[in-house]
Image (cartoon, rainbow, N blue to C red; front, side):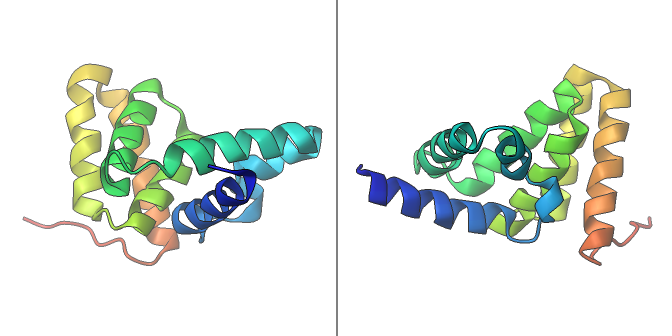
Length: 133
């Protein structure tokens, strides 16, 4: 893949994943504030070479990412990837189920934090509805 292809893949994947994420919440903009060249290199690698890989579907990639970020209790990155998961077609029920599944291995406090973030993102998108039995 030449530089032109990597730039295109980076742009396409970033738009797909993060189209509705506020600029101030995008890690790229934080990195760029400190080192523009390194930010570009990181973005080209992470978004252009890694996230754009087609070995597994984007939906699977994002559900795995949500599980890992839930277990690691990384709320800022989790919020970003919940947006990405919804943008690539994951259903909110799937995301919640992955978070609940993670509770077995990461604990209930990590799950509660992740569910709060999921609720926050869904409220931002005006798609949160409380389940009733």
